[in-house]
Image (tube, rainbow, N blue to C red):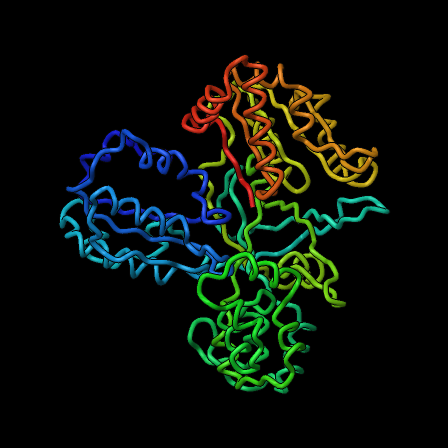
Length: 506
């Protein structure tokens, strides 16, 4: 969406939009400029435009598909006419997306010339989003060939370096892409659920693809069994008479539901209401399908053509007196056997790439596992002999235990691949220091790099780090550039429009 020439919007007769929602109903990065334009005073009336929107989101969030809904209403308010109703797609989006696309094209009288694919075959998610032999719906059975801990003794974290062999896959990736991993749920948690449900696990139920499978297999490989879906919570509320659950699943609920769900899983709801029972098929009908997890790739194909590297924080914590495990991170760290197939696919991220000009400077903000794509970027530039300067801001908890890839980064510094490395270890002193503080400390030089054409990248936590980094970036331009706050905002907006400010945040 950020590449769309907004000047031609006033002359569009047919408009199809596919968009996700970020955070609390906000536009994703690649839609912000378009959203600002259609809410500006210069946006034209769209009386001649017929449109339809496919919104993609996660129904675990209160403002499910919130940006797609807002965009739908805004286009209508500008006089555009809905050619086909908006589709609101949950995480398992392939089928509803394909249905929406085919029906929307038909409702707009898609031209019968130009594309044989549109003429002769129904549109699928893969035909539009990028086809390959192995994909999200047909993952490649890879082999996990390396699994090592990156943290030193005494660290509070468990961050792993994984290497996955691509032999025989034909899969190709680029620096900046993500790897999709199809996990298996924790068998111990499956046993606990079956115990609470008073079921053996041998009962036959519908699987995620409509085939019939044993309940145990369904809970292991077909359905999400940690995150609490609203239909399940609503069903328990109705059967138990619990007023709080009824309130939390009522229309219009917002922050209260998020607060309740945090630190709780499906098992906790069953434990709190042991009298509530479900038939096997009924129980799985209230669950969401198990989704692949996406991880930023931390290697370059120029350096590792037959392998993919991942840098993953293994999630383990205690809540409500129970030990919790990240579904996919602990699957990779603890449960995948060396000889067992690991289902994977490549998820292209065309809006997160090293600078196209090899001599362009590059500034990378990647604390924690946010270092992953920048390790790939640096490997890429080293392998291709790029002459552009590279500046990395990295941080974690403690230098002694959490300086991931230290030897590799320091070697790149000595070799001149990494021009600058600024570090922020938050717990090595009384006052916590983060990467945004290091940016502020080096405001003048950072701004001079931007003025010299540097590309600015951010990877990591979206809720805090990325927002703080964005605020400091505006501050750097304002103070070091000697311009007003308004002009600084315009400067940053121009960086985004020129694809020189890119984020991979989660």
